[in-house]
Length: 297
Image 1 (tube, helix red, strand yellow):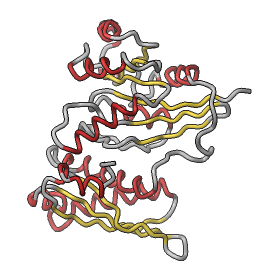
Image 2 (cartoon, one colour):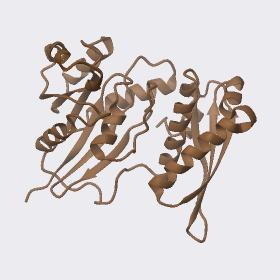
Image 3 (spheres, helix red, strand yellow):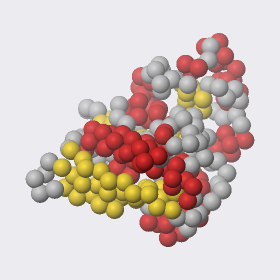
């Protein structure tokens, strides 16, 4: 029996549900999700291995016009990833009836790539199914997609059909990762991403984009039953520091509790988590800070 394997990238403008889509396809919450745009900052690989196939999903940042060095890094890495994958999931959402400027720019790049591209219309649970035909027509006129898949990552509608088509398109290849490996991300990176997810979902709209997380300590105790994690949350304004901490430290405590529970689920061990908050003005334009947080190469 031949074995099929390959790398699949989800691309599209911000906030179309790419991370939720990949989490649902793989059955694991590796990519952080939020209703706020530009949540994903780096390429996160989620690995799903079957008896005769291995799918490596690559969640990339949503593509938009960069406003700082971090935004430039995110745009570049999203574009670069498209050149190194076997299948591309061009993802839009059902509330966008026709390609916008960002979609057109992505499609322009796709026309220079040989990999098959599937159109994934997400969030179909939010519209009447009769509205789908004009959406499919408008996007199909802009690009000759290999296939079109209306789905709802939220409800799971259409995901099995999409998964079957991905497996069909996979080339024959090796098993890139061990059977029990679900992501290529180091534990420190996963812990930092989980903490950032909780910050994004709890904080006010304008703050999350100015938040960065660094893991300072990640150490298993000698008994092997508890792992100590200490993390620093960086924000860009002094006023934001107070908002992150909250009255009497209650908001930071809430973020810490939510983070700890999710980290324990993924790592399967008891976690002792400490969070600290520091102000670093305009860190998203600071080359040293970006390298420190793993964004600059």
